[in-house]
Image (cartoon, rainbow, N blue to C red; front, side, top):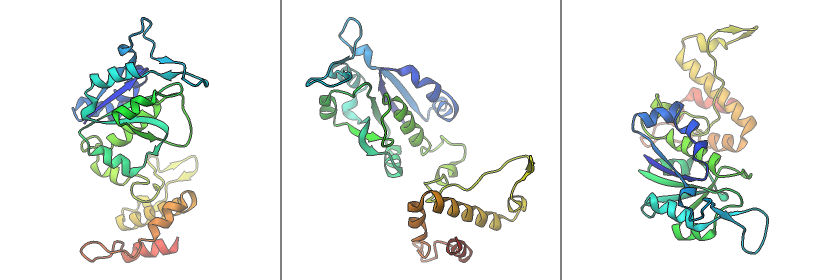
Length: 250
């Protein structure tokens, strides 16, 4: 997958896109994240890319011309263009999965008071938000978008099942995790996790996930338990008898 990022601050991305999972995916050729500095397309002798808004108001607005130049340089007319914006639709699993199916897309990062509306209108940009709050620019939201999409691309994660079993994607929040040592400062790892009984371990994880979800995300919990009697396409029960007992117990 190729992702073009248009920003005034390309150096903000390198510690994220060139390290850890994203960096390894890039080294393998699975991800190609290209950073374009919008200032490089400014016609101003000082490489200025913003100006005061028409109609007054506080702050500065990014000008259309440098952004148009940057978008044209990455052949954006042939790609999906995303603008990270607090007024956009909230990023969710459905949108992440949709983007993960694309071969390429472009992310435009706004700054200051945003970008000239003519950019969004002409390029048909889809506005996406990562939450109901305002940040100083679109760079951090863009990193969140890239990371969440990349995890669903085959080959990016070492374990292909990891993305499928992630908290929220599975329908429940993730159960508690433990590692060595088995005892630390008087706190023991739950005995069931060291029992070697895989069925009991799976049921314990389900129960813990249910309890956490019920407490912290009752909306997800209600949605999950409403399907406890559903059947698979072949007519078999979606959950085993033991699993349904756990669900009803919680």
